[in-house]
Image (cartoon, rainbow, N blue to C red; front, side, top):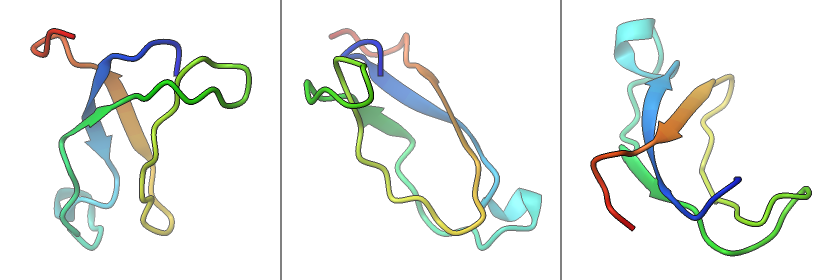
Length: 63
């Protein structure tokens, strides 16, 4: 992740609206200072099988 911001889950293809399992998932995630793949921050996310997740910076949360 490029920054330690909070991120909002913008799209979850596993949601029941898209024919997925509808498993509960947090709506917001916080990147932590743990460098990975050349980026200064990273997030740990449990990814359901065959799922696409799209995150966007959460402007409603001030760091």
